[in-house]
Every structure is written in structure tokens, then in C-alpha cells.
Image 1 (tube, rainbow, N blue to C red):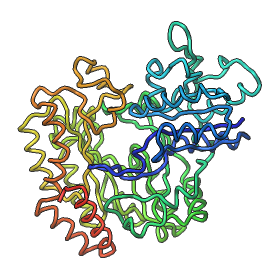
Image 2 (tube, rainbow, N blue to C red):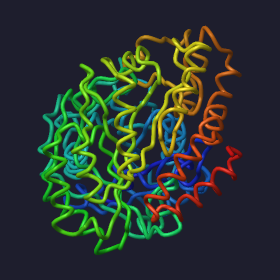
Image 3 (cartoon, helix red, strand yellow):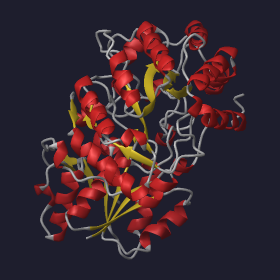
Image 4 (cartoon, rainbow, N blue to C red):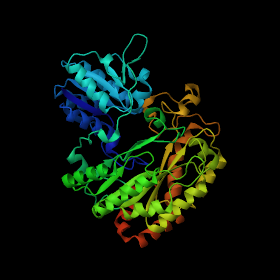
Amino acid sequence: MKVALVYMDRALNTSGLSQRHVTSDPLGIRYLAGHAHNAGHDVKVYLQGSRSLEEMTEYITADNLDLVGFSCLTYNLPISQEIAKRLKKHKKNPKIVFGGEHPSLSPETTFTSDVDAVIKGEGEITFAELLTALEENISLDSVPGLYLPFSGGPRFTSPRKQTEIDSLAWPLRDEQIIKSTRMNSFMYPSPYKQTGLITLLGSRGCSFSCIYCSSHELWGNRTRFRNVTDVSDEIEDVYRKTSANVGVFYDLTFNVNSEWVNRLCDELINRKINEKMSFYSTCRVSAPNGRLILTKDVLQKMKKAGFSKIGIGIESTDDIIAGEYKNGKSPWDNTLEVVNFAHVIGMLVRGFLMIGGPKETPKTYEEAKKRLNSIPLHDLRVGYLTPLPGTSLDSQYPIEKRYTNDLARYDCSNPIIQSPCFTYEQLVGMERDLLKHFHNSNYRSSVISNIVKREQRLEDSAKWRIEDLKKKGLI
């Protein structure tokens, strides 16, 4: 079959106030494309980029497709539904399939008269079987893992067992996109000297149950790790084809299994991949019982293996609020210890902070500013607490407790949950206020200066950082 996989998001080509760390194509549909390609189908990935709705419609319909699949989070569902509506009016009238986090967890808001099926959860095997069923004119009811339209609401065919993760095909990547992609942040090498960026997954799922995350509903309450040899083979293969010198691991909790991290790092070192590439991953600082799990040994090994930067979820500088968000304990002292040690060994750290929570007060907000000026973070992303489908937050805060139910605004850059202590306008201003406070302080200047003195290779990136912050009006 002639198949399109579509991702609608103009923001992939933009850098906002608290910008995404990476502007790149989504890895999920690249995995789907890889598996469908190996099954013998003609597959192409279509990214919106800077295209308008009209341009995107023409771009897709020009290829006379049999089926169009959309991968969606919550914020890009409405625009994806609009494109699907336009495609159905085309003379080819392709089959329309939706998948991704939002469709998996909220099929009832995904289905329109233009949608023929919704894939639930891990989609590689389901998608390939769906294509086979359509080719052979077999009822889609025989394919596990699908929601199908029904007069009384979406009908689920049957559950599907989780796939053996090492049996899946590597992503079907676009070499030109890899070569043109950059990590637009304080990173080694700097965006000036990056030759391309590879997105990677070493694992799927998460064994934790944070109230703002739907991972446990999608993947179950466990983490499945890939064979480190296969991961390393994949990295080497893409490097040979593209010479990309930055790798970004999208794992939800990269370090939860320290033995796996050590094995992967050993592979990267033994193959000398660490001499060609620099890596970034997101890490978890504490276990739900408050035990520190991002240890000094793990950080040192990662640094040696080429990890020049990590990201950690602070979520809140208040221990009680952070603990509630993470459904366990999240001691600030652990975060402080990890960031201090990373700073000492010359590893960059990006912190993720959530604002707009219902239990935030003027006191906790001012305390956050003080604590941010006591921790040597090198980068900060601020996002609004958002009740997405499949999360505990979604059930805790019905529409009457939200500012909006416009799904296009559910991108973590807009206040959603009504606050008893702040007006909507005050919440909107918090992101810029916190970022200016963070980047403009004498303390942050000394932190950046200190790490550049010890890691002189960061000097070029530090210059890029200053230029970027000036453009955004943050310094």
C-alpha cells in the first residue's frame, strides 16, 4: 500500500520563550514507518514544518495515497482532524487512521466521521497488521489493538500483548532532516558546530506513576530496555550515514536501571562512539521512597561515555508539591546533590519546572525563585501543569475547574488549571518572570562562567546561549 504518516506541528521549526530542547521530527512515527517499510509497504513521513493547512493538504494529496496515518499528542489533535477532513474530500478518499498518546487514551474525542480507525498504544505491529487486513480485504475486527467507529461510541477490537522490544525495526529516518537538525540550547557541541542530531530510544515505558504523565496507561507500569548492542549498532549505523555528532535519548527515565546504563556506556566507550558524538538524556533523581537513584557513579560513567548534558524533572522546588506531582517523595536535597556534582564534573544540567499548579501560592512562588538561585543549573524549561488524557490530573480537574477545553492549548505553554491564588493574567506572566529571574541573576552568571572555565570546550556554546537569551528578551 502507499502510505503516509503525518505529524502536524509548525512548532517543530520554531523556538519559543522556554523553547523545546530539540527541533526535530517525531521518533514515534519513524518507528511505525520502519516497521511498515520492512513489511513491504511504500511509506513516507510528512512533517508540517512551516506549511499552512492548504499547503500541507496539497503536499499530502499530491502522492495519491491509499492510507494516511496521523500521530497525535493532545495539542495537535484538532489540526490533524482538520487535515483529515480535507483529505477525505479528495478524489482518492484515503483511509484515515489516528494513533499516538491522545488517540490511544481518548478515542472518543479523536473519532470524527472522517476517521476509519484509531490505534491504541504501541502501534508498530498493529499498524502493519491493519495494512495487511486492508490489502487482503479482511475485517479490521480481526486486528487486536484497534478502536473502530460504532454508533454507540468507539468499539475496541481486543487487547494486544506488548511487543518484544528488540524485535522491532529501527526507525525509518530521513538523513537530510538529521543533518539539518540542531539542539537549540546550551550544549556541547554548540548549535554552531553541530553536524546533525539523532533521536533515540533505549527503553520504553516507566515504572513510576507521576500524576501529570500517562505513560503507565500506555505502556504499563514497567520499563522495557533494549539490548545495548542493538542500540549501539543503530547509533553507529546512523552516524555512518549522516555524520551527526549529537544524540538525544527520549527515554522517560533513562537511568532507572543503573546496570543497563553502565552496559550502554561501556559499549559507547569501547566502540569509541563517545569520541565522535555527544549525548543528552532525561534522568530521574529520586525513587518514590525518596532514595537517590541518579548516583555519582552513574553520572561519572555517563560523562565518560559522551553524555555532555542531562535533563532532570524538578517539577516544583517545594518538597510537598513535587512529591504530589511525582506520587512519592522528591527531596530538594537530592536534586541539589545531583546538580552540584554534575556541575563539578563538567556535565550540563537542564531543569524542568512546572508552574500553574492549584497548590501554588505567592509564598511557594517566591521560594522557588530563591531556590533556583541556590542550585547550579545551566538551563531551565518552564511549563504549565496540564491535565492530559490518561493522567491522574485529568480526572481530578473536570472542565469547570479549567480555564479552557480547547485542546490546541494543551501544549504545556498555557495555564489550564484554575488557580485559587493567582489570576489567569498573573499565571501567563509567570513563565517569562521566572526565566528572566533565572537567567539574569549574578549567581547564574557565575555558574556559567565557572563551568566554562573548567570545560573550555563549552565556550562557543556559552556565546550562543547569550545571543539566544538576548533575542528572547530574557537578559
